Image 1 (cartoon, rainbow, N blue to C red):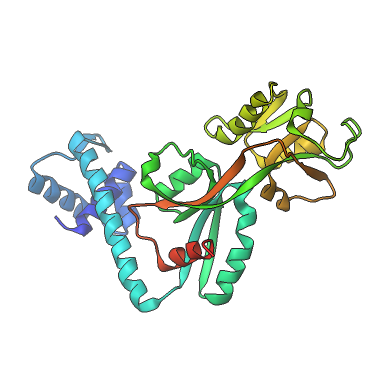
Image 2 (image 1 turned 90 degrees about the horizontal axis):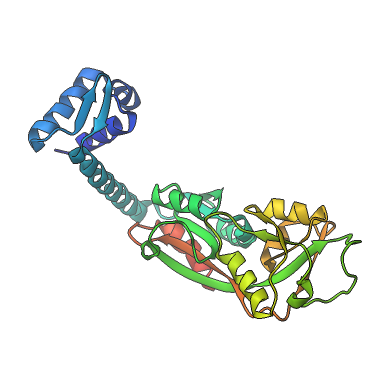
Length: 296
């Protein structure tokens, strides 16, 4: 059994039919069927349960799918590593980021492009769960994110470079007719103020930090809306629905004509930030050098 046959097998497993897999592979159906038969004869097991044209993986087929995916991934990464020895730093660097960390990227990308103009970038935005999937399927190499990274995968799979922590600030609408008029605030001042919480069903720890701080100061926050999107959260603030508490760096992406923010000196926690990548994956030279920019 060779690598070519493994790729054939994975194509059939993905498509569920030999006919569709052959089209994806740009080959005729009979040769592909013969290769599958040779694999099953060599292994002495059936890899698919044939139900008409539909082919479902057997238990042996599911095991082979997992192993073949890992083998071919390692082969591809090895080829990339070897080719980089000759080509140097070039190609596409794919990065994921939560929206609240996007402001950390432009300066680093501009510097990187100045010194490595042959590298282009692909940026994918999403929540922790989406970005975790992107890492797993190799759509991206790195994630710039709030910590802890709540992807749903084992945290032991990741290497993490911790970046400077980000203070929490209170964000209010610029024209706050309904809000108290002072120009400085403490978290305890917000005991009865409507609060918009940044939280999703699966990424909760940033919000929990704020809620726990409120409880430490002796009150339960008056949360009137939970929202998984930073942009929607800010839009609700501008509309006067309530105030929100966010990491300060998030606000560089929004117009100061619509919002203003205030430090909260009685908050004892900050938002942790970091770069995440997979331990078991070869990092391209461009990814390694991009990470180095954050260490200086």
